[in-house]
Image (tube, rainbow, N blue to C red; front, side, top):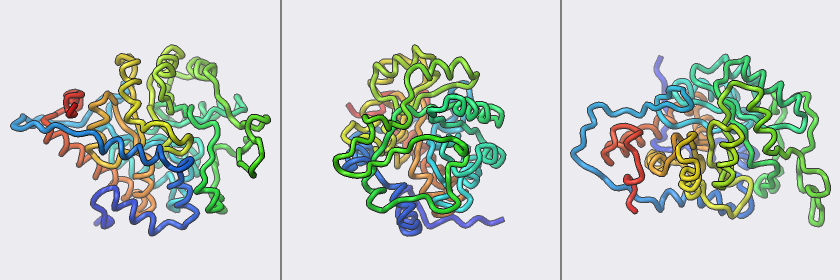
Amino acid sequence: MQIHLPDAYDLSDYETLARKQLPPNAWAYLAAAAGDGLTARWNKEAYDRLRLLPHVLCDLTKASTRTQLLGLEIDHPILLAPVAYHRLFHMEGEIATAQGAGAAKAPMVVSTQASTALEDIRAAGTGQLWFQLYVQNDWDFTVKLLRRAEAAGYTALVVTVDAPVSLRTQERRAGFTLPRGVDAVNLRGLSTATFQASGIGDSPLFGGALPVTPLWGEVARLRALTHLPILLKGVQAPDDAARALAEGADGIIVSNHGGRVLDGIPASIDLLPRVVDALEGRIPVLVDGGIRRGTDVLKALALGASAVMIGRPYIHGLAVAGAVGVAHAVHLLRAELEVAMALTGRATLDAVTRDVLVP
C-alpha cells in the first residue's frame, strides 16, 4: 500500500498546516500559553542560543541512536509527551497517535485526560506506552487508574506535579469548550472541582476551591503501590529533584508544561543542567519544551538529558495526517538528530557530552 506523506519537510511545516486545518476552538487549546506567553517563547529561544561545535573525519560506521531508559530498550531518545484530548485534533484520536508512535518506534506517554480508554490505546499501539497520572482528590480513584494501567501493560508511570491549576487567556478569549463526544473518558465517574476564573475580584483558589493539590506524600504512597518505574514530570528546582529521588522517584522530567501553567519562569533547557548536576547521574533526567529540531535534541542530550519529549509537534502531525503524520513528524526529528550527531562526530548517544556545545 502506498502512503502519501503530507507536504511537510520539518516540524514548522506541520505547525503551519495544522493551524490552517484545525478549527479555532481546537487551535486555541493547543497553542494557548500562560500569561503573556513569555515562557512558551523562551522555551524555543533558549535552544536557538546554544551553539554546536562540529568535528570532522570521525568514524560513523557503527553509528546508532539506540539507548536504554529505565531498563527499557529504545530505538531513539524521542518520546511523545502526554497531551489531553487527541480527538480534538483528529477523529481517531489517541488510537492514531499510538499507531504512529509505534511505527516511529517512539515511546508514547498517554494522558490521564485522554479522549480514548487507556485499554483501547494499548490494544492499538505496537510500541512502548507509559501512563501519565494526575493524582486526584479521590485517592481510591487514583489507585484504580494505576491498576488499570498496570493491567493493560503500560511500562512506566509519569506523575505530573506542576499543574494543580492553570489559567490560559487564549483559551478563555476563544471561549474554549470540549465539543460533543470528546471528554476525559478515563475520568468518568470522578467528581472533582474544576478551576475556572470567573471574574475580576474573585478569589477562586485560596478561598477553598483549589481542585487537585498533590503533595510529596503521594509520591511515596504510589511508590509503595506499584512495581512500575515512576517519573515526576514538571520538576524544575534542583532541591525538588533531590527530594524526588529521596521519595523514590525513578526519573525526572524537567518541564514547564510547555509554558502553559506559570509564565515568567525560565526555559526548561536552561534549568536542565542544574537538575542534572543535583542528581549526579543517580536517576535519568528527561526534558521537554521548545524542541523543534534534531539539533535541539542533541543540545538537550549534551546538557545531560537521557531523552527528550515533544508535545505540540506530534499533535500538529496528528491533526494533518493522523497516524502517518505522527510517525512522519518523529521521523523528521530523528533524521535531523542523526545528521547533527554525524556532523559533530558523535556516533552514539553516550558520546554526546557537554563539549558538543561551544562554551
